[in-house]
Image 1 (spheres, rainbow, N blue to C red):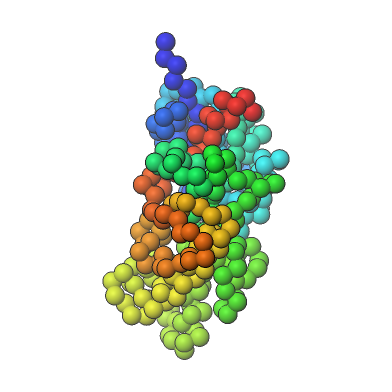
Image 2: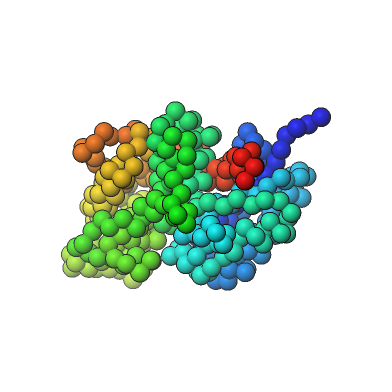
Length: 308
C-alpha cells in the first residue's frame, strides 16, 4: 500500500502566487503560478488561491492532508491573515480559516522568509547550521531565522523583519511601511529605483524621461556603466550596514541569500561587512527561488506530525 502523503504548498508574494502539491521528500506536482500584482481586494486574492489549490489538486490527482502557506508579511497568526503588507495592494487577506473550511484539511501559515529558512534547512543542504538566516532581496527585503532547529516567530509571527532595519539617515528614503531610512527603501526591487532617482538628483544629474528598474540599473552596472556602477557601490554599502545588523542581531553561522536580485547580482550587491563578532558563511541559495514554497509544505507536514 502506498503510504506517501501529500500537502498543498502555497507561496503568496507581492507579485505572484505559486501553488503546488508536494510530498514529504520535497517532490513537486501540479505546479501553478499566477500574477496578483494588480489585485487590490483581499477576497479576490483568496479566491485566486482557492482556485489554484483546486486546480493543483486536480492536475496532480492526489489527495492532500494539509495546506502550508508562505506569505509576505506582516501577518496575524491568531486570525490567520496578512495585514497591511507594504508590498501588497490588499489591506487584509484572511487565509487559514477559509482555506481550511473549503478543503477540509488543517492549514498552517508563516511568513515567506520563515518558510524560506525552513526550506533551506530541510532541502537546501543547510541542516548542519546551528543558526541559519535566510535573507531575500526581492520586491522587498526580509529574513527568516532558524536557531537550533526552531523557527524564530515572534509574538504575532513577524520576527526578523530586517527590511525595516534603519540603515540610513542622510537620504531618508520613504519606506512602504510609512517610515524612512529602512533597508527595503534602498536595496529592494521596489525601493532601488526611487533611491537611484534621488541619488542622481543630489548630484545634479539628468533623471531621464523613463526611470530605470532595479534590474536595468544592475544590468547596466554589470556591463560597466560608470554612473550605475557608482550607484550600486553605494547600495552595496547600505547592504553592508543591513548585514552587519543581521549578524549582530542573530549571530548566525550561515546566511543564505535568495530573491531575484541576490541570485543574479550578489557579487555586486554584497560587499564587505561584519568584524564585530564571528563572520558567518554567506552563500546564494541552490533551490532556485523555491525555498519558501518547499518550506511551507515541509512546515505543514511537521505541524501534522506534532499534532498541531
